Length: 322
Image (cartoon, rainbow, N blue to C red; front, top):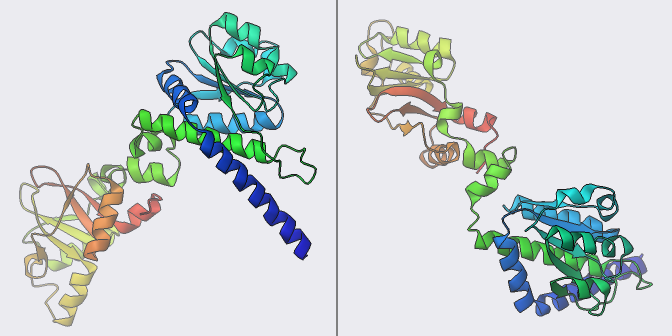
C-alpha cells in the first residue's frame, strides 16, 4: 500500500515540475498569441489528435466559457469536409507533442489556402508543424509521469494548463466581467445570482397581499390567509405604501390582547416599513434580508406605490445563493 501511495505522489511531483517548466517558458511568444487570439474577429479553432485532441476540446470549451468564440475541429473529420468550418481570418491552434501527427500535418496546406492564422503548440522545434505555422509555442521537453515515460501525462497536463492561462489572459484583455460570464452560464448558480432581479420572482398583480389603511385587523388577517405569504402591505387611496403587517406583528398583537375585530389595522401595523425596488438583483435583496433579519420586503416603484412583495422563500426557490 505504501508503494502505491508513493508512486501516486510521484506522479503529482513530476507533473508539478512540468507545470513549473511551462510557467517559466511563458514570454513574448505567449503575449503574441494572446494578442492574436484577442483580436480574432472570427472563431478560434483548436485541433489535436488523440490525447492532444481531448486537451484541445477542453481549451476550446474554456475559451468559449470566458467569452472567446471557439470550437474543436477533429483533424480526421476535417479531412472529410469539416475544414469548411474554418474561414479566412480565423485562428487555428494546432496541438501536437511531436509536431508530426499525420492527421494534423495533412491539414496544413488546406488551412493555409483558407487564409487562417496558424499557431503551433509543440515540443519539437524542428518538426513539420513548427516549420509550417506562423507562430510556434515551443513547450519544454519534460518527463512523463508514466512509469515508462511514454504515456502522455505531464505533457498533456502542461498544455491543458497553458490553454487555461491563454483563455484567462484573453478574457482579461476583453475586460470580461461576472455579468458576461453569467450570460454564457444562465443555468448555473452564478448566472441566476447575476441575472435574476426582484421583478422576475416577486409576487405581483393579484398575488400581492394588500389592504387599505383604516381597514379592520380581521380583514387584513383574511387577506394574509388568502395570499399565504405571511405578510400584508397597507396602502393609502393612491396605493402608496404606508404600512406592513407580518405574522410576527399579529403574534405580538395577540400577546397585547388587541381587539382583532374592533381595532383597525393602523393600530398594529409597522408604519413606514422598509421597501425595495423591483429592478435590483434578487441576490442583493437576499443579502439585505439577512443583514436586517427580516423575511420579506414590499416592492415599490419610484412613486412609492406597491408593485409586489418579495419573500426569502421566493429567492431560495429560484435557486439563488450568496
